[in-house]
Image 1: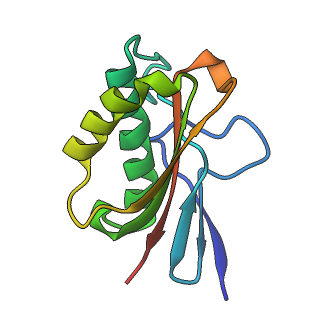
Image 2: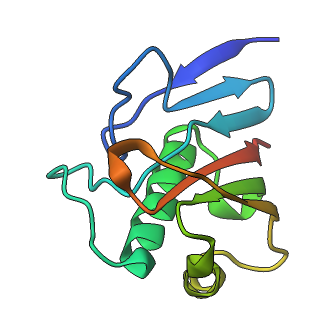
Length: 126
């Protein structure tokens, strides 16, 4: 099975020894994407905009791998404040379509750059 790193300027660049994404056979895995705007490095203030940016960063990695968002099968959401779950859930429902991917949501004590959310996902290539 071929393993290939996925890299795109449409999502924040990796800042350590990891890849933005990895394609392994017909599976694509993203790193945890935080809500950093790749164009200017800014981070939105409110959790809804942070959720939107983090998910859009995930989508960008999948696009770079040739995978559309409707081929994402699993998502893990890390929240600094679990009370933000309803707000994040609304944004998530706007950006994903049925059938929705399987999803887990985990409360995290801290996230890189002190952001409120991080998102990772697994998708399937045709």
